[in-house]
Image 1 (spheres, one colour):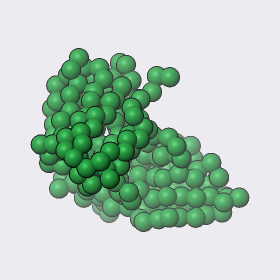
Image 2 (image 1 turned 60 degrees about the vertical axis):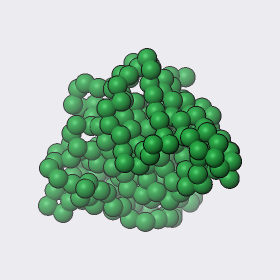
Image 3 (image 1 turned 30 degrees about the vertical axis):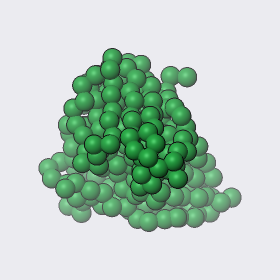
Image 4 (image 1 turned 180 degrees about the vertical axis):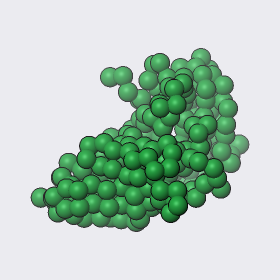
Length: 117
Length: 112
């Protein structure tokens, strides 16, 4: 399977605990995105990497959130001291930088659902 | 800021009915516009796109035309099938491609 994979698919945790999600993008894709989706809403942008560089972060990404992409391949999203408001689906997407006609071809994973009790 | 508004669902149609899902946008400049689809149990995937005014995106029998004068990008299909049941998201991106703004999604159920 050469699509975007995310792990775990579902995480249940207690308030105050730390959680980490992993995303493995399509291997040749140099751009990687994290989005958050809550019930009844569309995906909201969190952050974006070009290779290993984190180039943009949303104001939604509080200081409890940190994302890394250390070698420009897989990425992790860590949430520290989770709150009930963090309960959401966390989506990872990747894309190939380059030709203008490729713009918009985000390839999404199936998401990691976080439930904070 | 940039944003997308799409019609609320859920929408339920009989097979072979005509589909329209409305989408309007607010953005500076000349964004690219997209429709993404999420089938049950799967990730979002690009359905179609248009990168400039009056462009028509099309795929799998779906069409949408980029209307700058009405800031709209409505999704249409002449004859829906049961397999079209999914959630549809309208989205826009400025041409830097760094950030996409999604609508809230419209759930479509097609019944035989």
